[in-house]
Length: 598
Image (cartoon, rainbow, N blue to C red):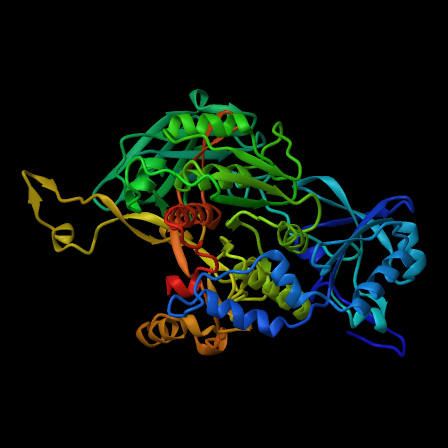
């Protein structure tokens, strides 16, 4: 951060996140536009928090499970009176009439205006930004802004001026790469079925027939469709092939017109596999039939952002169709049930599938991202015991101050007996960050040593039993074993996405995983060159669970989605169910789960 005699230039990210996250700059903001400020006040004794957490989360420690209350944590980390006073005075200089501090005085919030902030901070120039996946605009300044050094030394995070939240793109299944002058298609597999969406421009010669060729391990089949019978909209067609084997498939589509035949293969395999339902997951993960929560004070939550709401009627329909109880759902923040998001729908429906009959909080953060979430949860004297976060951003763009502060917040929640599940994204090791192919880009907060990071797997046939790999036949039929195994989700094996994972560049490797990581690196030959990742960093994922072909109810209809965003709430609910047994036996909750898991 550049410094002058009395001021330094404060950076909220290490890259132009408005461009990375797809925000488009518009007109200059009106001076009367509201600015919601959040400030993380520098805390004391954070090293002591780390040591205490290591003790209470280590099953071998005599202090295991001896958690602290919010007040007891506050007595350790509460900022100095000077820090609190300095931050309060500075926010009032920015036009805030009322500055509100959290109970432990380590966070401050207030509301001001664009005009007031621009007068107090001349380098701040606010504009209106819009995003194609968000209905509401965002008012922000771009780049660094000056902060008095006497203020800066008491602050970890400043949110509301130039921070841009990542926006979760809707997990729909569009036709891949539609071109105005060419046709394209996208197949998706289900339980013995395949659906194919076709984009066929009106500018092309009209199609007469579509021939879908599907090559699988033990069969090759073709399906012919009259174009007129499968047209579902302007320039769009939908094909459905039934009676397929549940196995990976190579797909080719031929289009016949008066002039001839045009043929295209799909660029990657397509996984034809069973739908993932509540009964399948509960059976695969050995949840006994009928096991539901018995402890009334048990709790779990999903964290939601950027207009990701849920529909209570969808949730009710989902529980009825899956045969699971409809739990009490508490709302933190707001909800628009008429505008549910796919992400939030997936989260809420699947955390209650494994965490059955457990009081569940839909925790919606009105504005901002992880900073605001951490503020809200830390200020709750009795937060839910398990939180599932299906959101993240490239570790590369997160400043050291922000990363260290959020790590400290995760530690403090763990010290209070809270478990945090984070998911690692659906774009492999790149996290969608355009850095080229010779280095990974870890996802945060999955790269935090203080969260439990989730990857996604897909159902697979049992190929470990010799009987299942024989080329013999029984009564003339090939031997095909059931789907009772899992493999990592990969675009290369037909799941349509690749699970995230990798090694942190900013968080050192924690002691609880050193032995496992060393064994992995020494026993695995198929890894990138050591210069492409930081083998001394925190390795993730910690756990993997099903994340492909996940069934949800969305806007009153069946839908299929997937991603690590599915595996996260599935495992969050599992851990909440374990909490139920612990609490019912008079024991403490799991809290920070990684030392226990490893």
